[in-house]
Length: 318
Image (spheres, rainbow, N blue to C red):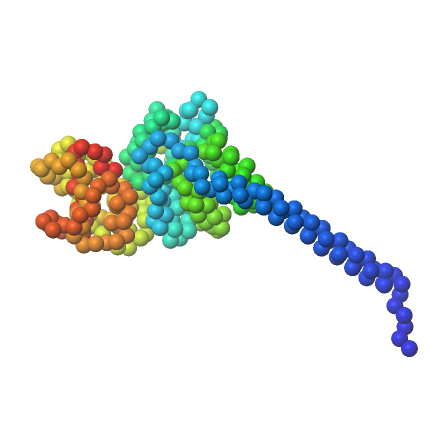
C-alpha cells in the first residue's frame, strides 16, 4: 500500500500553484497596461514621426539625406541659455566595423563661429580646421559638457523600458532642446547601432590642442575603408582665386582615403565640376556629398587621375 504524502508537502505544492497563478495574473495585468499605454501613445508618436526634428538655418538642410553607408561624421555640440558654445565633439560612425569614435574638440577657436541664425560658419570652420567632412549635426541647448560619462548614460537609456514607455515625452524633449539635420529614421538607425555596439567598438579621443600633429591624428582615425579599398586618385584643378580652397579640399579627400594631386589652371570657371574618367563608385558617391558640383563624364578632359574636380570661383566648393 502506497504511503500517503505528508500534509506539509501537499500544502507546499498547493501554495506553489497559487503563487504561479498570481505571478501569471500579475504579468498579464502589467502587459495589458503596457500595451494599453503604448496603444494611446502610438497614434501620437506616428504623428510625431512625421514631423521632422527642428534645425538651424544651414547649408546642411533636412532635405539632404545623410548617406550612412559611408563613414559619417556628425557635429555634436552643446550650448547654454546665452547661445554660447559650451562643448564641441565629432561623432564618427563607421558602418563597416560598426564602430563609433567620439572626438572632443577644444572650443576656443570655434566659439565666435556659432550662431543660431546660421550654422554654416561653425560647420565650415570645423571641416576646414580638422580637414574632415561634416555630414550632420546635433546641437543641444542643455548646457551640459558632453563627455564619456554622459555618453554612457545616454547609451544605457536608449531603447530601455523607460525610453519605450515615454516615446512622446522623449520626442517632445528633442523638439524643445535639440536641433539636427538628421531625420527621425536616421536618428533611430544610428541610435540602434550605437546601443547594440560592443564596448570595444566605442572609442574616445580628446584633442588638447589644434596643432598639426593633433589634426593629423584625426585624419588618420577617420579614414573611410570603403574609399581606401578603391585606391582612387583625384586631381583638383585650382586657379589663383581658389588655391586655398583647393588645398583644404585636398586634405579632406586625402583623409577620406583617396590619393590627391593639386594642379593649377589659368582658366577661371564659374561653377565647380566633377569629371569622371574611371568611375570608382564609392569614391564618386562620397565626393558628391562633399563637393558642391555637377558630375559630368570626362569627354574632353585628360588626366592621369580617376576623377577630376575643377573648382569654380562663384560658389563654395565644399
